[in-house]
Image (cartoon, rainbow, N blue to C red; front, side, top):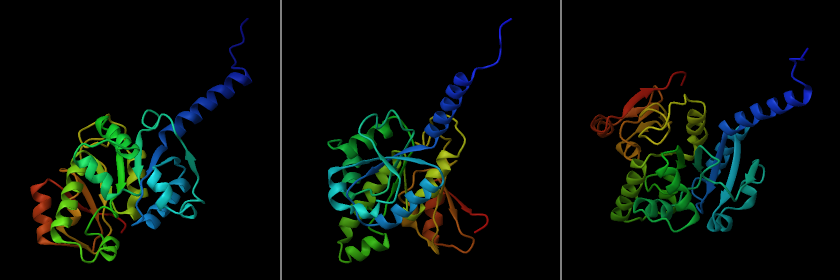
Length: 256
């Protein structure tokens, strides 16, 4: 009579495959470009992801290697990868998005490691979460670095961000990088849709944890986004008008 029991070796193989499949689901590619603005908050967000059990595969552009001090990320469990950057990852996280990278993407230029990887994720309609701190002229730290930025230049930077956001890239503050990424990883898997998250438009909320919500905070978001705010957040009239015109839902975050 045949023994229907699974032998110990076969059981180990099955368990290993199950574990690997789980790890693949909570595995992201972290692409570092050469931006310092917001990098401390970004590194804290990466630590939060690691503590939440997310496996972080990392690739550094040459400029990132030069600009970002190694001690900023030395304690973060990053696995350096050089191959299958797109094929092996469902989600891309860009913790240090530069103005240069945004400008190139906005005009379809893919002549570098960063722009090639990001553009492939965009064209495959896969989730991309990026810290906007270094590329957004309205972020406080950016303004502190460049207090005399000409208004026309700031307008150009905002326009580039809006264009790239329209491709499905989810921009957020560096401090919210972990929250945004976990919302995607732990959200329902419903196939690739038009918002670039692999989810129906608006399912993944953007968390904006600020006292005042202005039009500029919404201008970098894709049409049809959902925004979670605190109960005591003041929403300006311009922000409300912009949200209505662009079908952006403003929702009070529970438990805040």
